[in-house]
Image (tube, rainbow, N blue to C red; front, side):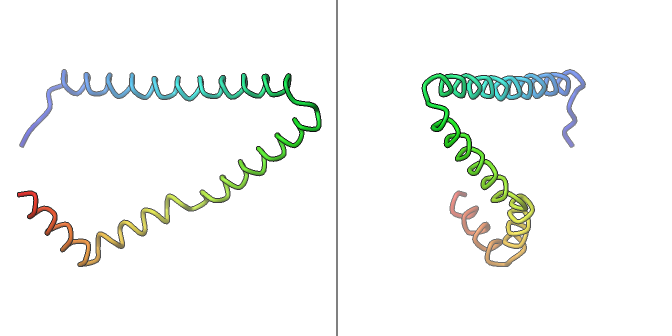
Length: 100
């Protein structure tokens, strides 16, 4: 059995925390970019065009949200079902044997 030392574990934790922090910072920067794009569009478009843009943006956002409802659970259920079937197991075995 391989055990990890506390030093290795703390380095891994530190790396994961820094990685997570970088991702969170990146997401915040993207939202700032989105705000800047909206401000630029507000200066370039007429009020009617801006209203049409925001209406379209809202419809697309709501549609994307509705499309994702239950998607995570469905994917997990389908993957587990495929893994449980004998076809998946035999395909996995054959691909493993091909690489050996």
